[in-house]
Image (cartoon, rainbow, N blue to C red; front, top):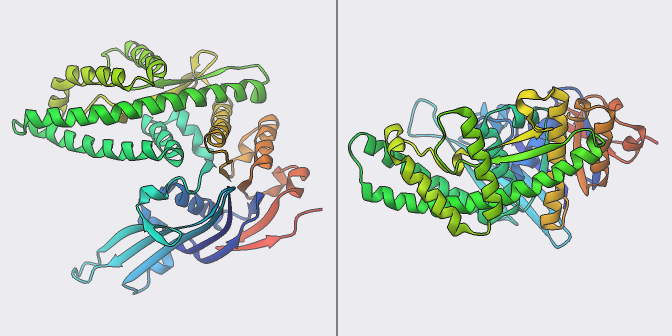
Length: 413
């Protein structure tokens, strides 16, 4: 899978860009704040419909374009994708309209997705382009809140599994309805009969999510452990990826809660094929938590509260690992993600690496660049090309990024 052409209009600092992209590794270099990261963000957004950096999608529209008097501003991201089986044209439109009815300058914002020039649901854009993104802040998958780790699961799985993505979307809608009803019940209103209906739907959808995550994390854990042990630490350290599904109400004591969730994760990974058993256990957990959920006005059991963690030599990496050890674990995770996607689809995803090479020592940098060199397409950013080996520079395409303009350079001899 490769991107042969990328077109950007009114996206970040790109007013207009038409860029042909070659297969293999491409190095984007230049000073900071010139547009290197923005280009990777555009590709990631086309693949996932999400930005890894912006708080709101409207922030992605070119600032100069927003300052005009035009009633409608459109940001466009278009990519021509070539695979072993076919080619496809992907497009995302970011549309901002200034309201004529209101005098306070309010605007409306919407998104449109197109595949081969035909409008589709945003969800249907997923999977047409698959990417793996490397960022310096990826270490927050270890040290940050559980929401970061759930987001990683969902974005990765949705690129591969459309059934999972549709199930997750339906689950979130039912969860929102159930939480609204729980708040009503807490205030003495609402219907207990409706709670039963929402709970049954939540159990059916949530059990499928539990099962799919259990399989994915088990597959990812095996590959990450192999890479970390054999390629990154040369047999010096072992890591284990541990699933902690919220398949029951949290225990009062932290140690017991951790043990209970770990046991639940192991149970799920051994029972993932029997969704009926997962439904029975999930339903029982919700029944037991009903009183607490009504009192709190929210659903406290379910995959929306899931978590996972890394253990290094049997100890939690988030608490006991050094910064270098945490970066090694994330590198193993990302390399495992690449291999998992290739195994699932038969094609290597497009690799996007934003200023990450400098984060690793020589051994880990070598392992990363070896994977990059073998990828069908990889796009890297750097302020200093000197951190790369001469061999890698010779086999890479080089592009200079300066103030939203990109210039192809001759590859060093």
